[in-house]
Image 1 (cartoon, rainbow, N blue to C red):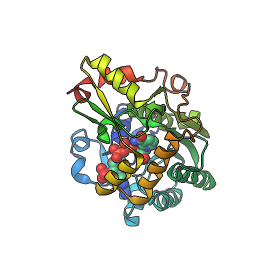
Image 2: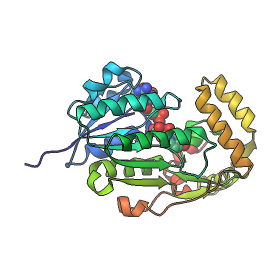
Image 3: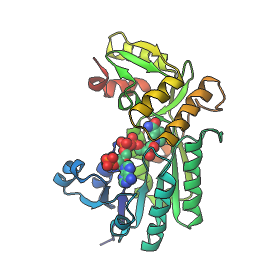
Length: 291
Ligand SMILES: NC(=O)c1ccc[n+]([C@@H]2O[C@H](COP(=O)([O-])OP(=O)(O)OC[C@H]3O[C@@H](n4cnc5c(N)ncnc54)[C@H](OP(=O)(O)O)[C@@H]3O)[C@@H](O)[C@H]2O)c1
């Protein structure tokens, strides 16, 4: 019997990580293990019989036990400048325990050095390479689900912090599909960098699509990047990271981020499917997006 490679997925209680675990759990080719910081959020995984290992990137003593016997790992981090030291600690330990392949979820590959957290992700990519891992670097653009996750949609009102900037967007379920596939067939995807962004829209265009697909009126309310920053700091966002997003919004409005609306044609070759466009996303998530 062929030996199944063992895959550790970080952030298994988050949106993308949870989805990756579900996809891999259905694959007979691999064994998936969920890395979990908050055990109270892992009830569903437990009920499904998925192996769970405690893993907090800020607690060095959790890393080695979580990484023992792991062949491949999905690395993602939270919205904090600590991503740099967290990733280093994880990768150094993964090297010691013999992990072979790392799939890293980074951020936009727009050609600018002005948005620091995008650059931090590229430092992490370089560190992965320098340690000699086999790797796949994923660089998603804005998640369509941000409109609900970040509170940008309330009772038919779309919050707009980017004026008439057209962004490139990805359904995070599509990101999860790509991540799962690159973990499952790491030999095919080794050494690859995949940008992920498959539809473009301004926020007013998102409101129009919501109006058409859901069949109720959606309005847009415009706010400044300064109002975004103030609100996010009050909500407890990590200051260094959220200043990066604030800078991104300001540069977007000034049209100083090249390729902010670039889309990519790699999805079908990786997954054999077509990527989700805004209209399909709205139809699929109608219940959550309607009011
Ligand atoms: N939103 C976007 O537009 C966008 C665009 C590009 C890239 N990304 C990146 O995509 C990735 C996945 O996003 P997501 O929406 O799935 O995030 P999410 O739903 O917020 O989930 C984050 C996950 O990471 C875990 N985590 C956070 N800090 C940790 C730590 N110190 N140790 C261990 N686990 C930790 C969280 O655990 P708990 O459940 O315990 O909190 C949670 O499971 C993130 O890295 C994000 O930066 C997002």
